[in-house]
Image (cartoon, rainbow, N blue to C red; front, side):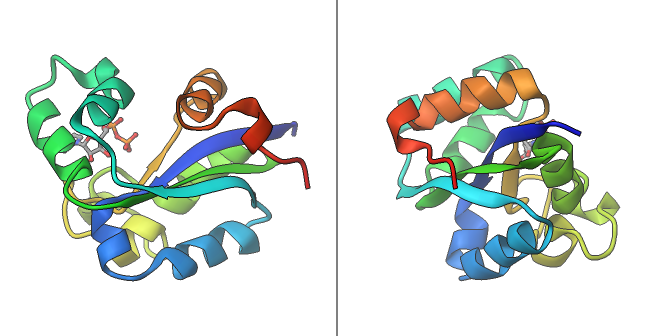
Length: 141
Ligand code: UDP
């Protein structure tokens, strides 16, 4: 497996539930290192830009409104197979379908408020990390 980086966002619902540390702990226990991080209250334009791929989907406006409803915690994670590993830790998009013990099964309330975002491919991970962090703010540890 190759050393990879992926982009993770702890969404407003999970930040409001005060489980940032619990989610970070899962990353760490799975061997993922936080190599960049910031708390940020996204502007509408930032959220729309981040989710531009979903612009035509029926849930787009609700998704953007949710993502700007409070601060989020944004981090780049590094580790062996980080993209897939993070997706496995997250669980399915719909928490009702998420496997027991995953972040979404434990902390998400609904498909709209589903606690975390994670890049779905290595290519998107690079794009998404660059969307939030200049290269000089991502650290090798
Ligand atoms: N989403 C939603 N309703 C849906 C499908 C998706 O609100 O029917 C939201 C949900 O927050 C999800 C995000 O849109 O996390 C992006 O959808 P995607 O299919 O990329 O899921 P993910 O990669 O986050 O699991």
